Image (cartoon, rainbow, N blue to C red; front, side):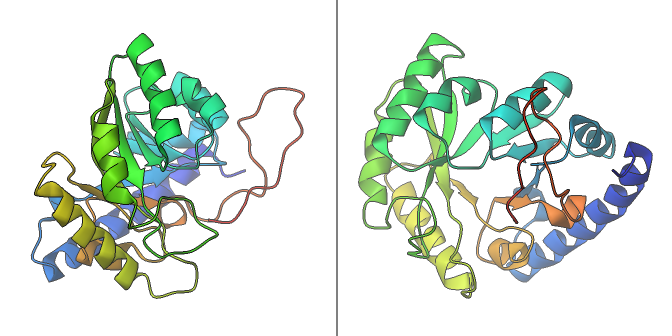
Length: 247
């Protein structure tokens, strides 16, 4: 495993390169780079690596499994955690209050479960509605047609703050049309719901296009951390390591 000092040296250079690429993409779109938040997706890297990244100035981290989120949040202080994976209702208790922002709310039943835990705990949970803007059956998210009604109903639930939209484009497709559709949907929604402002879209291989199309949050893994380990490292003792999916 890469040692934290060696990793910190590497991530410092990667962070500088990412920041420059974000700034250039924002400039092409006539935007300020400060309008884009970079979330470092730290899945499968252990807490020592996250801490090394924090010391290099990374403040926002994303996890896609509740178990890893809870373990790393307990080990690393002074950062903001984002939940970016598919969330099962029986895992919502662990994520609510630990994640500053849940990116992947794609159905009303999940929103209601999150809100129940929020009302019992922190009082309010910030969320994004995930939309399948690329119409890819392999991806999560509600349909473009269903998104406005889902947003409307979620806004009425006590304990939730719906602050925007998230998408993952279809693998292998040009991501720009999906990103553009999500931005246009966001713009339509803001005419009635002005607080629905964020666009979480763009990962390592397409984040510059996402910024050009209006992303306010990009979710970057390998661009910041390099190739992922073959096996997860933050797991309970006695549990066998499981293969980590690419991404």
